Image 1 (cartoon, helix red, strand yellow):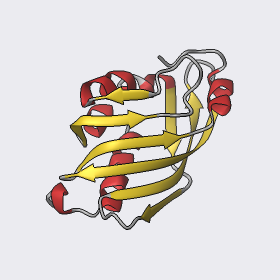
Image 2: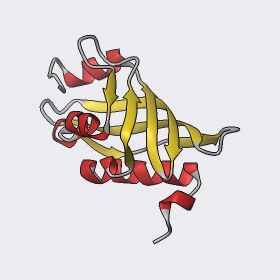
Image 3: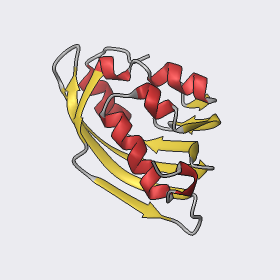
Length: 141
């Protein structure tokens, strides 16, 4: 297997989305640096918008597959930047909210910074109103 420290940032991000789609949240967290900072500026009211450290982020995301069954990533565009360690991605998911059967169709924009082949900063934007409507009042956290 190729050393992740040598992989281009776009390939590293694709690898992280593959693990996300496979519902392997532990494997996804393994792609993060211990000191990762993850920010979700548009998270629904009452939700945390920042997580410091891999443990905190994993604790938040580990049960995600029990709430939303993501079936596919219909769109994915990854853009390089003038910093070889930073990518910007536009992507979407298609799935189902497990508790109520509602469709889950969400678009995201992510800004991702890598260091030594690991995600060190993730800033992700999505529409909290679409999220709340799909969840039908079920809290994710």
